[in-house]
Image (cartoon, rainbow, N blue to C red; front, side, top):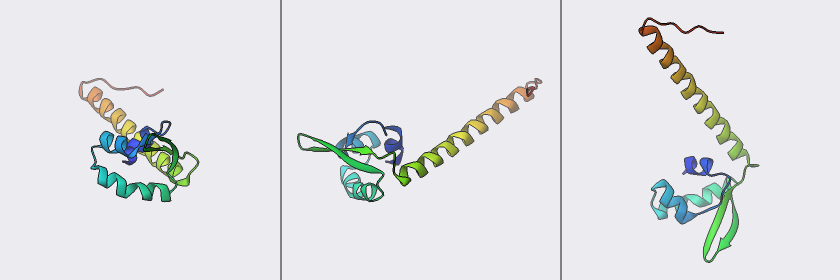
Length: 99
């Protein structure tokens, strides 16, 4: 759920869409939505027919903290990928030169 919310932070979404996109049961999403609202990670945005639409609150401390964790994870994955490429190149009798 958090992955979806962090990836789709610029668009609004309903609980049904959140359930569909994450593969979670609608009941699970319905039970967890109050927690996201309490953390101020999401906020109500508008109503379309009977569907309440929510949007990520980028000003919230929760969003800022999750964004920082996301950047750290991405940097770690990138660093590991660079190390693997370097090992494969050196195993092939080629070495990477640093600039």
